[in-house]
Length: 445
Image (cartoon, rainbow, N blue to C red; front, side, top):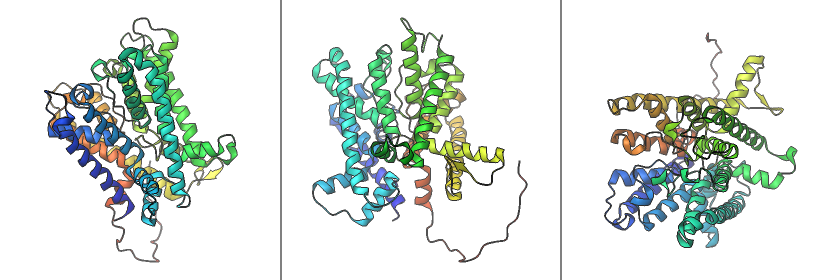
């Protein structure tokens, strides 16, 4: 099988295993019965680091079930090949060429050389960042929940935030809504989300050449510029539109710093994570639409987040610029982008739009007469495809058909449109070697 098929089936295998574990009686709280669809949906959401839930995580699953979900989040966020490689190295097993190719596909590294070393270094960075995040969050949770529970909650939410999963144990009280006035919690979670959403290659490049900007790879420059721009523009937008909304930013005892912090948090979590510090259903329609756009863009390639990716948006923007200016080449940072990259970007964009369009028709049939507006259904659908996890109506309130479609979208979004295309493509299709057809023109525009 091709590396793309191995990755797609690998994620599917982890989902099936997770579903079976969550169906065990020991995985549920006493007196709670988890239905097969609920267990499967939770497993898909965890492996695909989405955060959409059909049952409350804290009240429905036992400690065993929560730990299973946490393991699925870590496996899904970092990729099973990274864990497999780490185990092989620790047990002094040989890393085959096939496994190196799979790692190359998972991490989007420029070449096979040094891939294993990069994996081990990144795993150390991941655990160090998650450990630091867990320590900071624990200092905020322990006074509220006690030492043992506060420490456990710190670890759970640090891993969930770095992996951009959005799973939390405060769902009954509205995710992180009770920390609306706790800037240390919101800032720590947002920084973990950003770190996980940058991508493996970007993190490694920044650590190696962070102070030498000229040595940074083009990909790193694009990701950093787009991430910073989207975060700032999103925070500014939410601050302007929700500043006087008493159900979102302008809650009781709200101060200017707390409003700015929550606007920043909404901008951060909208693109990848799924945590929220205020009720998403109470946002104005313009803010919901902006959230949909940010979710659709998502994080960066080879990261723990989903979406069409920041680099895809960047290439589309510079492509439009080249059309407006009249350039035949597409240039960025004094570099010319190859045609194959542009074709891939346009394909990813169109496939994602096609899935959302097809899904919108499906949801209009599944949810007919159930009181869900088109904007709320689109919000839920984009949240699933971009593996974000935000919801305005609550995923549990949708029909079984919609839940199954959302599961498919989460899986497709986590594996990635490009990987899914390659896994279904016929690599041995008959081609006529050495033949190029005559060029012709088509009127457009």
